[in-house]
Amino acid sequence: MNYKIIYIAGSNHSGSTLVGCILGANPNPFRYFHAGEMHAYFNQENERFGNPGAAKKMIYGDIWNKINPNVGLENAYSEIFAKTGAEGIIDSSKYLKFFNQSVYNKKDNWDVYVIIPYKSFNLLIDSYKKRKFSRYQINNNLLYYKQLLNFISSINFKVASVDIVSLIENPKDVTKKLCKFTNIPYFDKKELYWNYYSCHLYGAGIQRSHCLKPWEAKYDISKISSNSRYKLHKNMRNIENKIVEYEIRD
Image 1 (tube, helix red, strand yellow):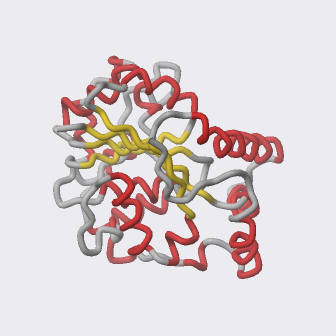
Image 2 (cartoon, rainbow, N blue to C red):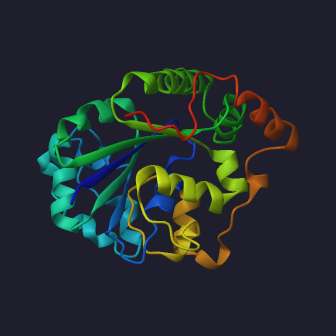
């Protein structure tokens, strides 16, 4: 059996946790294990090192107590495979620094996929302003995101981008495409990730609240932004950086 590593890269609030939750949704919580932003758990320099944190509140979140953070970034995936029995790890750590370190884990029998969540800069700025990011933080996030989007053409793994607005508009159709790209089986209503067990670390509060209160969960396009900004996203999708949607590079 070939193990899968599905690495979700992106900017803050670009939809990485949402994509991870959808791909990880399964009646067996560990078959495709959505680890969330696991980079912090294995990084000794991070204040969250070795601390399951928010995962403790999730059903099956106590699995992190069995996972040894002292193995370090270079052995993080091997440790999770060993302790969870997973066939695939969905890692929504986002940042290239961790990805560059985690590629040391690549084995001959591991399939590595990279998914880039796309949100136009105007929608990202809206998200940052709502969270009172400083101008310095906003500029740094956008600069990093631009570098990331341009980076996808230079790596040797299978790469695809997913438009987060399209995902929220048509969750079933886009989920099927994501499953086809990653070779994860799609089953009816997989996109309703909140109906399945979850134990991901950190990540977006919206997805965490959906998993904890599934009776309140839904896809709400009005949460993205105002209508005019939403239309601008559609226009910018074709001109902002060089992004390839659902294209697999071998």
